[in-house]
Length: 371
Image (cartoon, rainbow, N blue to C red; front, top):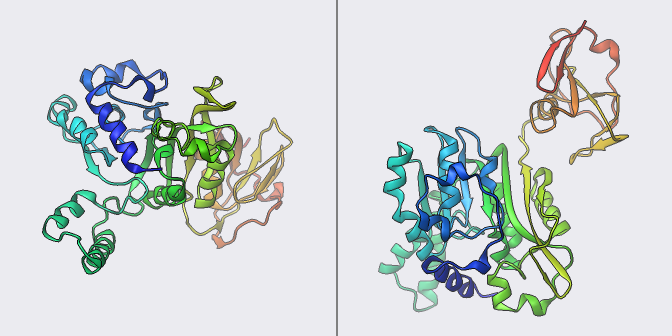
């Protein structure tokens, strides 16, 4: 689908409010009070990924549009955090930047910036490329080759968004606007820029069935965030194949936003974590899955039967007892210090109770010594 059609429609949305481009969303009203009315009215989305922002985060907003979610996130990150909005539409960037000085004064410091780039190629600084093209116009094969060489050098030496630099990637109804042939690259780019152990929260439109080609060829449906949508399971699979773990449909609209040819299109928010990537060391830790299911299985293939003391490495122990799953697992540290050894527990490895007697228990939000 033509990128020009998307740019044209969102340029219109920067000039006049487009009701058809957004789903009803219950945003945090307290965060909207600080925002100029024009930014709120000309924002188009299907979810509220700002709810996942933490104090001190470096946040990247893909397809930042009017800047609404960026300026909401800026109120949550505090003075030490930073928000970067990426967009390709000049009119939307102009709208977001129009209020930067005003918002800087309200926030107390300059913690938001907007950059021009394609969300499927977060290394390429499009503003820098356009500046370069002013002095090096492309009008033949030789100049085209020079442009490609410049792009590769720029992406390597001065990437727009550096590797492993972001605490939280958010997006609000934008991934569906990327051409299907570039969606895999898009997800891989998200994985590239996120720090090990960091998070993503992607609000987008998905379909319950595969979308036929004649709908994908409809420019109005595509630019309206419909026919370029991920199919539900396809979205999970693509993020899993990129390397993300703990992928969840954290928000899932019960009612479809639109139904086209009996295909339901609804909004959801997908959350996931990039693995730490650290080596596995065994120090004698164990976890017990509380239930209620007979067992659960993580994305690395480890199975956790209900009520069993399962051997885990230090990295997995931290992941299960300090993160999103801390209320689902009891963590047991070894009673005495042990020299860590490189080791990842083979699937199904139990930890004998004798090895953890007297060790410290971690119960969700509280922890204490064994009796």
